Length: 105
Image 1: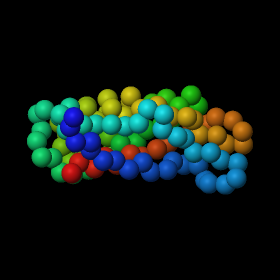
Image 2: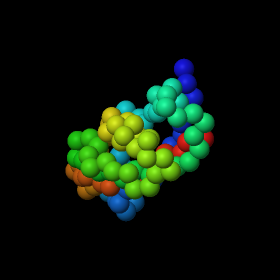
Image 3: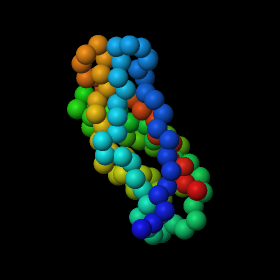
């Protein structure tokens, strides 16, 4: 099995208070080095923004910043495969915008 590339999930646009539950990953973002056969020993960061909708699905994923454009399609595909429990605000599911920096090291 290949080395798992690390990422950090930044919290979205909800303001934390007693009536808010942030989304939780159900199907996490995972990208292994062997899934990038055309690139070896990459080091850098790709910043992705996306919406987590009321059903926990990822939509409108786009690259904000990338150190290597050859990675963009693979990263976007993996981000779209993630799944979340939706954010809850005042007892109902809401959509939120997230940013995901993906660090290659």
